[in-house]
Amino acid sequence: MIYEIRTYQLKTGAVPAYVKVVSEEGILIQKPHLGTLAGYFFSEIGPLNQIVHIWAYQDLADRDARRAALAADPRWVAFLPKIQCLIETMENKIMKPLPFFDAAPA
Image 1 (tube, helix red, strand yellow):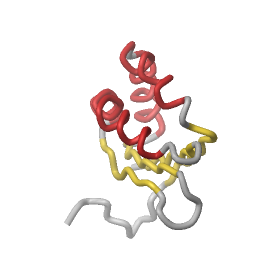
Image 2: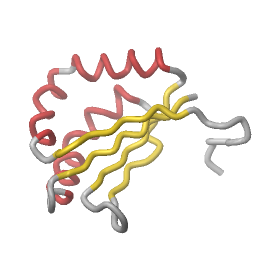
Image 3: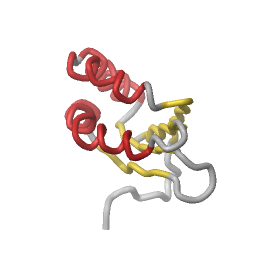
Image 4: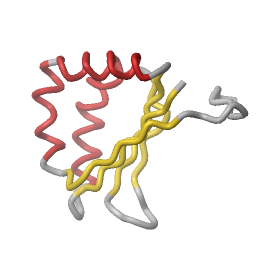
């Protein structure tokens, strides 16, 4: 299992617009392709105007196949400009859990 942690620094004040368009459209396109959403957050303390979303995959090959399917979806291609205009910078990390971490919900 790997986790992809995507951090978006949004333009100042853009969090409400981002949340609106993702909750109404974007997440409905992403979830069937990307699968397990482990978390979706916004910052309230520290660096502001950040969105962090975490996706879980079996391995890098699973991630690559799922991201390619999303990128090929015409609905996603049409949706992207709606959030790209709100994003200043993007950071992406792939994290591997330590052996003692049990990601299964209690």
